[in-house]
Image (cartoon, rainbow, N blue to C red; front, side, top):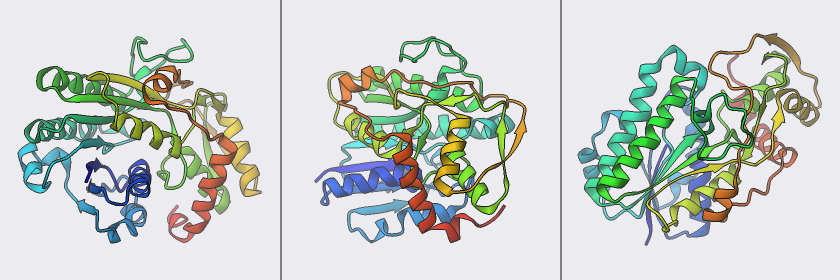
Length: 326
């Protein structure tokens, strides 16, 4: 029986990953570690895993990883572990500028403790959620993994630190460490601070949406099911001990195009409040995914219109909870 530890498992990507794993093999064990950080409503995370908790193979540990040592984690997690999928992190570029220390603690110290746990428990497979934000401002599109990295936010810096920390543990202790650079993941369960969720909520409530800059910034939006397939590919990868791999969609959408697509989906026009560009934001993200295709058989299938429709169906199903607050 396979046993996986998924950190941040009650979050957006984590709960989608766990659902997919349990569908593929109902007999696996999943230990989910999530501290229900109040960065956004814990009620949304509780909704994400409400039905998962009924599965006999699912176990929840509600610990703050920045405050839980590797030795303590060994006591909390019983039996052999086949792989760690470390998705837990304090997210968000703009908030990291306001409180960089909190991001260092959650994203670097938390990872340090998980790597110590892997070392103590002799877990050889470690999949780490990195971010496209590590590239910073770079016009060599599409971005390859060997680009020069110039992060411009504490969040991005913490993710780059995580990649290098994984390299150290891979070299010293034989842990296979795969850093997956996610590119603007969206879909059912998406965090409420991210553009698609935030814009949908505002448009439905008749509230203005904030557009930073002139709407020409663009992102490589990646549907969560495609990201999950990339993660699963990394969980079984064995050909080398350290890799950094982009998981994107290999095409970009401007902010104006995204807003227009959400308007079409909701049948309502957005009221746009235009503000200056935000510090820490990059003008464009665009992934070269040839390495992911070669090493992980990664093949994203979902275009924006289809992915937005699936997100919107999820949103309307739970809109009573999701439309709460301003």
